[in-house]
Amino acid sequence: MSKEFTLSEIAEHNTKNDLYMIVHDKVYDCGSFVDEHPGGEEVLLDVAGQDGTEAFEDVGHSDEAREILEGLLVGTVKRMPGDPAPRAQAPSQSSSSSSSSSGGFGIGIYAFLVIGGALAYFAFQYTQAASQEQ
Ligand code: HEM
Image 1 (cartoon, helix red, strand yellow):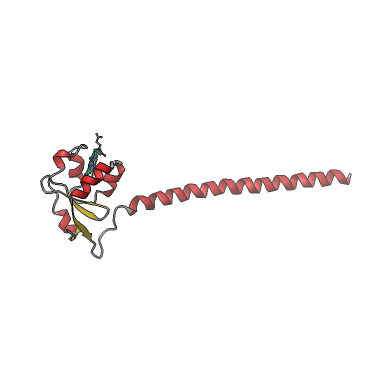
Image 2 (spheres, protein in one colour):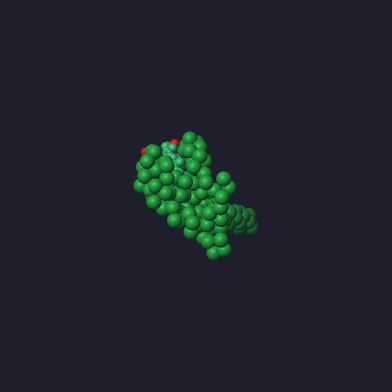
């Protein structure tokens, strides 16, 4: 069962009765499941012959759904030079970049508080020293 499919081979299976889908770099033959899918056939046809990892994970499918998926397994993706990277990496990259930008904002706030606090402290020391001189 460990057949390897190239992306162009998988892309040929893009009709309702002959529907392959990639999820986490594995290839699933969903043709028999299209009519039974509780989420409807339209969403499966949307990712027919393509990488459906993001679509599948975004829904937050149950363990039962994952068991059904494993039952449809026909092989793995054979990545060729120049093929696009697996889908699963795309959201983590974008979320890490957005969280790092919000992290940068958080550090900015801390730096502002620390520097502001230090300035207030020295201003206080200065006024104390100045008043003691008199
Ligand atoms: C072969 C792959 C898939 C299998 C085996 C599968 C299986 C299931 C199952 C068993 C459910 C019922 C709820 C649950 O147990 O989580 C479900 C619901 C759903 N699925 Fe999928 N699914 C697949 C692919 C997809 C894809 C690619 C989408 C794209 C968005 C999708 C969208 C949905 C939606 C929106 C529901 C919710 C339906 C509702 O609650 O009204 N599914 N799926």
